[in-house]
Amino acid sequence: MSTTKRCYYETLEVERNADESTLKSAFRKLAMKWHPDRNPGDASSEIKFKEINEAYEVLKDGDKRAAYDRYGHAAFEQGMGGGAGFGAGFASSFSDIFEDLFGMAGQRGRGTGRERGADLRYNMEITLEDAFKGKTAQIEIPVSVTCESCSGTGAKAGTKPKTCSTCGGAGRVRQAQGFFTLERTCPSCQGRGQTIEDPCPSCTGSGRVTRERTLSVNIPQGVEDGTRIRLAGEGEAGVRGGPPGDLYIFLSLAPHDIFQRDGADLHCRVPISMVTAALGGEFEVPTIERGKTKVKVPSGTQTGRRFRIAGKGMPVLRSRQVGDMYVQVAVETPQNLTKKQQELLAEFEKLSSGATQPEAAGFFSKVKDFFGSRASTP
Image (cartoon, rainbow, N blue to C red; front, side):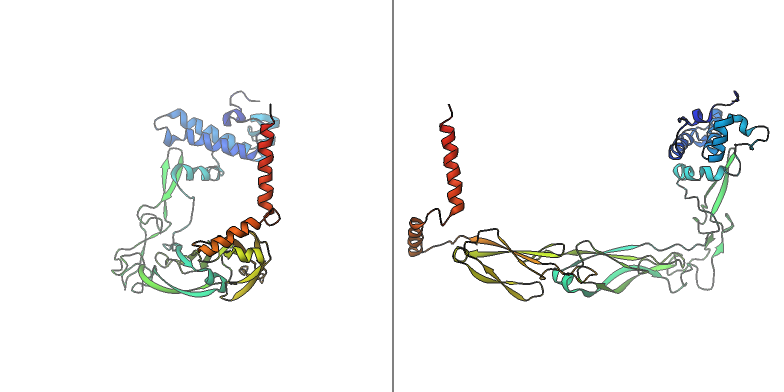
């Protein structure tokens, strides 16, 4: 291997078995560190920068790397493979780090002056009933639309935008930086490739004005909280005749007085009397479609028991499936009892036994055993 040049792997500070991702990461890191613009007045940084590029140009190419691994630097000397310096591949090698260094996107070609309009967001709150049935809603939003006076060109009626004299319509200008050339957004036309000498008075040259627009939004059945609806082309108008952006409707569901939603299922909590819970019975509950259904309660029902009513939940978005409704009962303790009611309950308490309240009897039996075991502990 030639002794006049440093090993390419050492130059990039990587191992010989480094994969493509590791090579690229090391190259980007070192190239940014030794870039001449970051080391003004340091001649050695320019040399170092060139060595880094040369090493990466070889090692990123599978064939060149294989040749280098076998023959070393000799593989590219005396006509065996051509130089590995700043050739045709230089621009592609550094296109990704230019963006890191200067915030450039590396776009090329002539500018059109037309920019796509921005996307817009509209937050809409709907009821649970709206989500169940679906609806068509009308909304009013302030939005940028194409200026009618100039038809979106930005130039005063009777005039036209002119090709930018600075960049010749390309939208970008080149600037020499040492031994290479940088390409930047044209400062005169901001990358549009055109300038307007006599702007439209209605839109001040932007090609669009703000108007209040009424739109119709179709909300399908089964939408959930956070559902996003896209209205293509209903966003802001593009600059100087560019395509419009999109409008995104973000839905949120208002809290409901009776139901709580869990996906396609609905839940509600219903208080029942202790007599109904003890003896059994039935009660009516509302459904989301504003109907009613009966729930039968067996004797001895306890607080927290749930009853499932199939097919009375929410529709599943873009599906024929429907969720269920779950009714949870809560046994309510009576308040403001009359003297007679109190006497009856006291009499009932005397007649009660563990058979009528098995859970309480079981609990207090465990409590008795608990204290008994403590007393017997030496």
